[in-house]
Image (cartoon, rainbow, N blue to C red; front, side, top):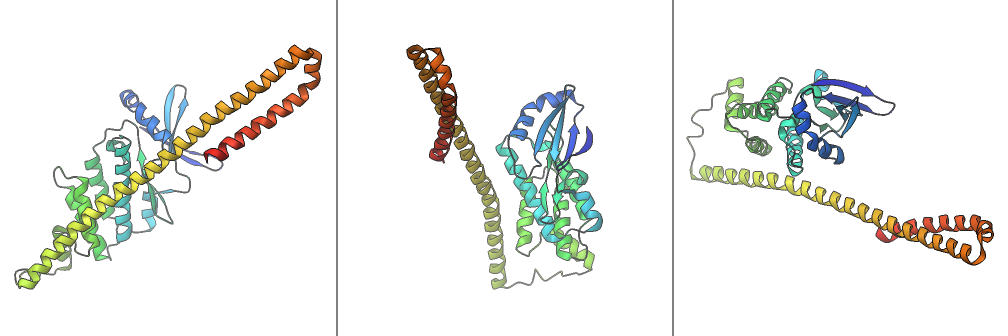
Length: 315
């Protein structure tokens, strides 16, 4: 896979060229899907052809690679959470467009962020068949080294995500649960134990000495966590589905306007053609030539009026 950069007058692009012929053939459909749709969470992509070779161009204008940002800044707890949720939303969107998660590149130098708002753009290569789970685990290990180690909650969250990713056959929903639990202020058990080892705090016996009221509070806390997890995992797909439906309606409206324009413009042109034929037949070619200027002006004005009328009516 060849990676290079193109800088134009107003735009900057990351370019990727795959050397695997089989991957290019299998990824042709995904390339068309990525090029024709603006998928939330992914960098906008277009395909450029050079001497029969396909080159994928990703728009990185006004963005910086995550690796460069973390050279001078450490990640806060909110940024870790935000990064994870943006990745989760991107995966949800890709699933709606039938795109494989193996195409996402989780290398820090290929993940681009808008520095001010920390808006992440992931790079998805058509036909990519990488091991997403393994790459995500490696990426979480990288983040663990670049979080703010003065923030205990941030370290606990990052370590909890990384520790969960080391488990065999873990899923993205397992990480969702950790982030959802972290929001309640109660870190997962393993991450909490790690934080206690770091601080040298031993609290053995506290959980054993609980009265009936404490037991009920603990059960209530678990119920709140479950409700929060369900709400979080439900709201995200609904939000993405609403945006997708809105975009689909907009595209359908634009198609209808285009069809109506073509029909009405053709009808107007046909009407003026019949008028010209009638003048020629009834008054001769000389009269038609004398009136040609007025006919052209009238036809142009009619076409403009037709375009404005159709757009106004459809809108």
